[in-house]
Length: 252
Ligand code: SAH
Image 1 (cartoon, rainbow, N blue to C red):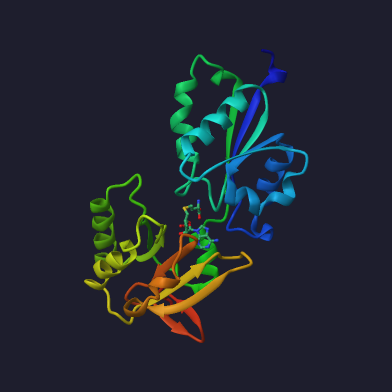
Image 2: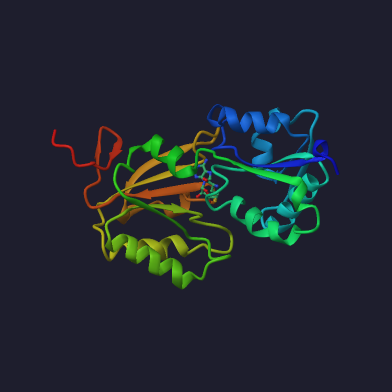
């Protein structure tokens, strides 16, 4: 193979949903790609950008297959964008791609360039809808126990709560995990008052966006779905005129 036939794999974050929130760098990567690979939902959100491109979609649980296709198409000399919602390095595929690359040593890996393109993650898009809840130290915790033991998730919830981090809860619900959010909230309530502000943001920037400001003691569990992020305030977080605010510490 000569240098002309080198392949390129962009691992692209497409942001929270609306095209207005995708970065110019992500747009450029998708533009120059002849193949776009992604989970069906995220591909549909950027469908307008994909005219004339080969589009390969896989279902949500087929991450390894999706990544293998993207790497192999890149090794074949294509320019490939593997698209992920939000940021590709936050509960997404950038890590899996980099972990799987070693399997392609001696099988064309030398011909492939890889680049990670950041996107606006759900914790940022959700925070912006709520006001300024992430002004002080925070932790992100995913309630998905598909790849992480539930005991470890519980441990992280209690330690983050005890340390008074603002807590962003990702993957709060799926078909197989209906009661995880209730269990998580019970753990947080051991350390934080029921009146602690909680922002519940569903589908940030998308057509069906919903933003609810509530408290830890009254989170509307039935309204939370797999496109929702919750932001639980720390002990200083408060609400003023509909804004969720975590003080940085300025004297005002
Ligand atoms: N890489 C993504 C996260 C993927 S995990 C990122 O950086 O944001 C999927 C979880 O992200 C969902 O269960 C939900 O908790 C959150 N999420 C993704 N898009 C969202 C959106 N538009 N609004 C609110 N939460 C979202």
